[in-house]
Length: 109
Image 1 (cartoon, rainbow, N blue to C red):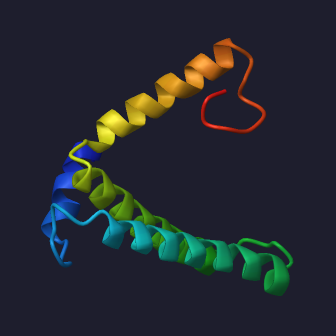
Image 2 (image 1 turned 90 degrees about the vertical axis):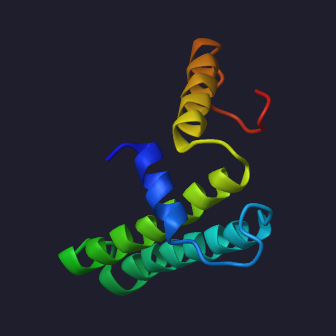
């Protein structure tokens, strides 16, 4: 599936207040789902000695799907496509790589 196709389909399932003018809702959802993903990784380490089982993998994939949904709807709130976001990110990383600045921190490396 193409990123923009996913974004369109995800948008059709979005039900939250003031869709089209509410960046806060998908942002908070993104934070929550990212936290759930991190919790599952933490428990993988704590409870399963870091051993990935098919069940844990499936649960992580579901969390990534939820994260993707919120990313897609955040992009829609910004009136940008996921493809544009992805290309912008790859351009940024390629520039950093060429300048040997992939390491370090900060957005304006």
